[in-house]
Structures are given as C-alpha cells and as structure tokens.
Image (cartoon, rainbow, N blue to C red; front, top):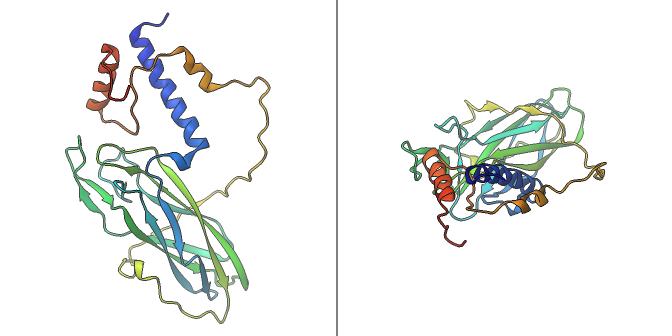
Length: 247
C-alpha cells in the first residue's frame, strides 16, 4: 500500500496526465483560450511585393498573456509561425509594446500583453510567384495567465489567403497595426505542415488512463503553473489532510 507521501506524489503525476489528456481532447474548455483572427483574412499582393495583415487577439475577462520577450525564462513567449508556401518568399512579425504587470508571488513585474491587442504580419511575395490564390497557414502559440498563475500553452490555428496579381493595388494596413514598428520585425519561422486528420486506430490492448485514477483519493486540486512556495504549501496541506475550499 502506498504511504500518504507516495499517494500525494502519485496523485500529482496522475493529475498531470489527466491535464494532458484533457488538453488534447478539449482545448476549447481550458482557461485563457483567446479569440484569434486575421484581419483582413484575404490580401492582394504583386509578385515581389509586400502586404500586411493584423492578427487580433482577445482573451477572456481577467486574463493577460506573456509577451514575445518575457523577463522570466521559465515563462513561454507568444510566437507566430507559418507553413512554407511557394508564393511567399518571407514574412516578418511585429509585436506591440508590452506592459509591466505585478503578479502575486513574483518579485519582478512580468512583461505581458493586455486582454486585447493586435500583432502585425508582413508578407513578401516571391518575385516569380505564380498568379493565383494561395492559403498561408499560421500558428499563434501563447501562454495565458490570470492574476495568480499561468496556464498550459495553447496554439491557435488560422489562415490568410494571398491573391497574387500583377494588378494588385497597394492596400493601407489595418488601423490596429498602424503604429507597430516593422523596421526591427523578426522573421516568421517556418514550421512543418499540420498533419492530416485520420480516423483513430483502436489500440491492440486498449487502456483507460482515467480508470487508473480510481485507486487514488483526491486530497487537493489546483491548476496552471504554481511557484515553488505555492506548490510546496499545496503538497504540505494535502499531506496534512487540510481540506480545501469547495472539497
């Protein structure tokens, strides 16, 4: 039989496993999921020319997001990446200015983006780009936080449609990104294409990971990332049998 300390450690591992399983199957139900969209979703561009789009981000009430350059190296920065598209020679991304935010348990203010903001992306078409329409798949990976903790990172998927035409007019960028500085914008990294969705194959010896939790007694729960002192307090109270609110 596991002793109390062993049960706590096992419960922590089981809880992490459960969180991973839940995040894979129900990302939409996770805390801090942002509404992410491209504006405009379709652009016209000349061969060898450039065009800009905004990526608008809106978090739920009470949340903020780590900036592209967080002070704490343990925090996950927001990133924008894209899949390779023959019509696009390169792309750059410009982020807004971050703000300083004091978070509970953190000695140094965090560099964050507030609940609503916009990111700028500039596409440069290949000089020999074929006339026609191309879909550019983008990914925005971010870590949302509330006033006490940060949560597991989330990757939002979105597309921008580029219409390559020799007669494409120069379009004024969206007002949301008019003030962003593209002169020092970083290159958008290229990532592997999204895997094709296929029907799941039944395992030879299926197991239910959630059923393994039936052998444990839940002594306490928490979510997101906890700092050292908060996690130590959580484990100590679970070992001592201190009942949490709502349990």
